[in-house]
Image (cartoon, rainbow, N blue to C red; front, top):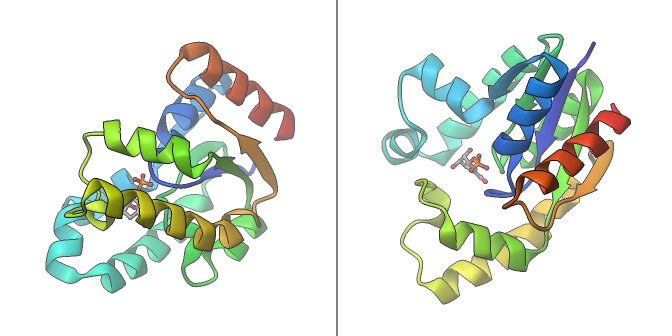
Length: 173
Ligand code: S3P
């Protein structure tokens, strides 16, 4: 079976949902950010800091090609992965792709609550952060919406919601 790839904005829940989907279907789960960190032995924020975003995007593209051709896996990508090079087209050609879509308001709330370090979101005031998310979501949606399936995921905090989303993905696979 082709690989299943989950895409969507930062903090939408790609990892939580991907892990659950893999568990329910007995597949291996991969997170592209973790894969990059393992392969290059460096955390993402440090890659951004020391090598810059452009080099990160290049590494991300190469690692995407390495992982996406594995069979029988679930892969969750970084929020920016679909928006660089021909990554979206490539993913559609080798995998089943699912866009986990949430509103800017939901993402703003999740991002405010999240503790992980995300280089693109650092150093912004709450107002700047809200504005940045809203704007970037508009730009990125053009790429995200090229996925083969779109799943709306507005509230992620409880297990039942995760189950319901996983069920929808399984129907689409
Ligand atoms: C990014 C999202 C991050 C990570 C990097 C850049 C982005 O992944 O790849 O910080 O451009 O949206 P998550 O979506 O898993 O946070």
